[in-house]
Image (cartoon, rainbow, N blue to C red):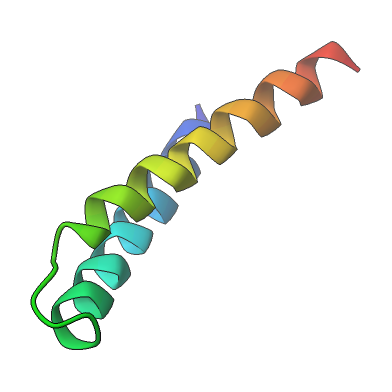
Length: 54
């Protein structure tokens, strides 16, 4: 349960940072936050699934 809460908080923070980067640095592209969030959560899924197999 703790891992899922940590993954949620990190994903939300990464999405928030991605929105800021997309809006400020990429010229009004806040959708970049969603792209970053999906990438971070995909990384967590792969990492936790590999960790269970070992």
